[in-house]
Amino acid sequence: MTSPHGELVRSRVVSDPSTALATALERDLTGHAVFKPQDSLLLDADGYGVLTFEDGIPVQAHHTGTGRGGPAAVADLAVPGPYSVELYRQPVDERETTHGADDRTIPPGMPAERLAGDPQLAARTRARAPERPTSDTETTPTSAVEAFLEDEEKIAAIRKQAKREAERRAEEWGLGDQLDP
Image (cartoon, rainbow, N blue to C red; front, side, top):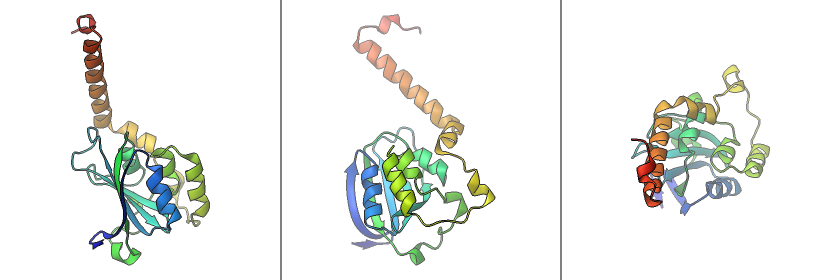
């Protein structure tokens, strides 16, 4: 199947993003993966994440809902699954408009570490990644955690959701009268 996004090579719902990342690495995918978290409470309702791969190595990240790229986009994707994941094969020359965009560049092992929590997959990915020249901005990138902590709206949404969940559970357990108004 060919579309403007490229050739769809895999479409699955996965509970662990490492499944899609490992598949891209094993298939030497040049193209991209679209990650649509099922729980979009903390993200824009229409937003999803896109990881760009070259020969199976993640090289860029972008989130359509927040408009952020790079490590910040990886942080935007770091929500509990499951995820609907589509892998597309697409030649580099068909995606020249974003190819090499510095604001979207990510370290090769970051998605495996931050999204999947899989240090072994991250190490395998880094081992296969070609050496990239480093610039001053690349030596001190904003980590996904730093980007997440800087997003006050996301933190406020998490607090609000946690409060609602605590109130719901207190009611279930018959402790609703014990809560402060």
